[in-house]
Length: 94
Image 1 (cartoon, one colour):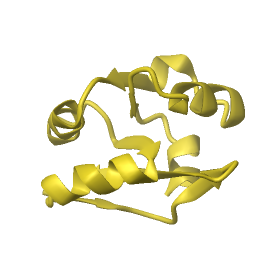
Image 2: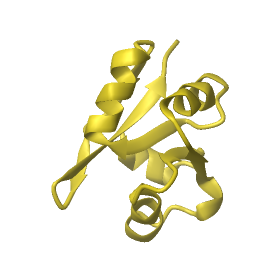
Image 3: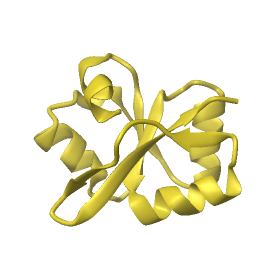
Image 4: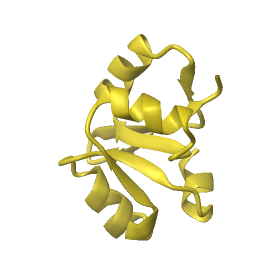
């Protein structure tokens, strides 16, 4: 889950232009050098498959759409929330 991501040194993907980057940096104190901007669901899948990122953090509805198309990925750990927005991490187990 998110706690293990925070304590690891693994790279984390996020949607370009989303507030997830600021949340990860400012609220969770994750180094900018660990964050990988991704521009599309296809980029999420590619980065996870090639192990460029260990996880992707995004809003729950976007992760749900991603997982409906890319069934070889799944959510690991508990979703976490901030101000009513949900975030989850999708990991590659394929």
